[in-house]
Image 1 (cartoon, rainbow, N blue to C red):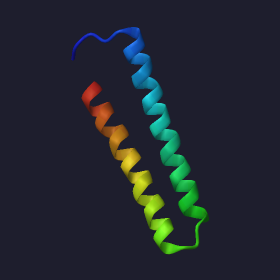
Image 2 (image 1 turned 45 degrees about the vertical axis):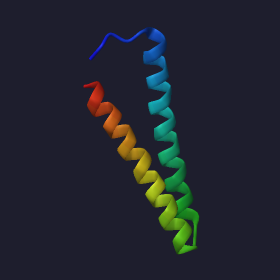
Image 3 (image 1 turned 135 degrees about the vertical axis):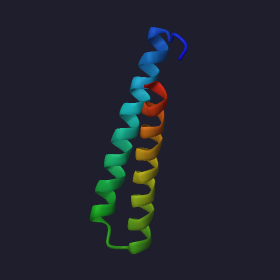
Image 4 (image 1 turned 120 degrees about the horizontal axis):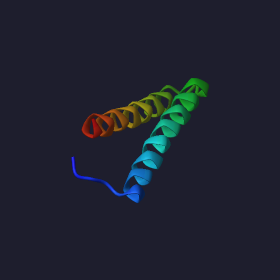
Length: 61
Protein backbone atom coordinates (compact mmCIF):
# COMPACT_ATOMS: atom_id res chain seq x y z
CA UNK A 1 0.00 0.00 0.00
CA UNK A 2 1.25 3.47 -0.83
CA UNK A 3 2.27 5.80 1.95
CA UNK A 4 -0.71 7.92 2.89
CA UNK A 5 -0.58 11.45 4.21
CA UNK A 6 -1.96 12.31 7.62
CA UNK A 7 -4.87 14.07 5.92
CA UNK A 8 -5.68 10.97 3.85
CA UNK A 9 -5.52 8.73 6.91
CA UNK A 10 -7.83 11.09 8.80
CA UNK A 11 -10.30 11.04 5.89
CA UNK A 12 -10.31 7.23 5.88
CA UNK A 13 -10.76 7.12 9.64
CA UNK A 14 -13.65 9.59 9.46
CA UNK A 15 -15.27 7.64 6.62
CA UNK A 16 -15.02 4.35 8.50
CA UNK A 17 -16.51 5.95 11.59
CA UNK A 18 -19.39 7.34 9.54
CA UNK A 19 -20.04 3.91 8.02
CA UNK A 20 -20.29 2.39 11.50
CA UNK A 21 -22.66 5.15 12.60
CA UNK A 22 -24.80 4.69 9.49
CA UNK A 23 -25.00 0.95 10.05
CA UNK A 24 -26.12 1.45 13.65
CA UNK A 25 -28.69 4.06 12.62
CA UNK A 26 -30.16 1.81 9.91
CA UNK A 27 -30.31 -1.14 12.31
CA UNK A 28 -32.00 1.00 14.98
CA UNK A 29 -34.53 2.22 12.43
CA UNK A 30 -35.22 -1.32 11.23
CA UNK A 31 -35.85 -2.42 14.83
CA UNK A 32 -38.45 0.32 15.30
CA UNK A 33 -40.31 -0.03 12.02
CA UNK A 34 -43.47 -2.09 11.66
CA UNK A 35 -43.72 -1.75 7.87
CA UNK A 36 -41.96 -4.84 6.51
CA UNK A 37 -40.78 -3.17 3.29
CA UNK A 38 -39.17 -0.28 5.15
CA UNK A 39 -37.72 -2.64 7.75
CA UNK A 40 -36.16 -4.76 5.00
CA UNK A 41 -34.81 -1.68 3.25
CA UNK A 42 -33.15 -0.44 6.44
CA UNK A 43 -31.69 -3.88 7.11
CA UNK A 44 -30.27 -3.98 3.58
CA UNK A 45 -28.80 -0.50 3.96
CA UNK A 46 -27.22 -1.49 7.28
CA UNK A 47 -25.70 -4.59 5.67
CA UNK A 48 -24.41 -2.50 2.78
CA UNK A 49 -22.63 -0.14 5.17
CA UNK A 50 -21.15 -3.09 7.05
CA UNK A 51 -19.91 -4.68 3.82
CA UNK A 52 -18.33 -1.43 2.63
CA UNK A 53 -16.61 -0.98 6.00
CA UNK A 54 -15.23 -4.53 5.92
CA UNK A 55 -14.03 -4.11 2.32
CA UNK A 56 -12.08 -0.97 3.16
CA UNK A 57 -10.55 -2.56 6.25
CA UNK A 58 -9.53 -5.61 4.21
CA UNK A 59 -7.72 -3.39 1.70
CA UNK A 60 -5.94 -1.47 4.44
CA UNK A 61 -4.52 -4.57 6.10
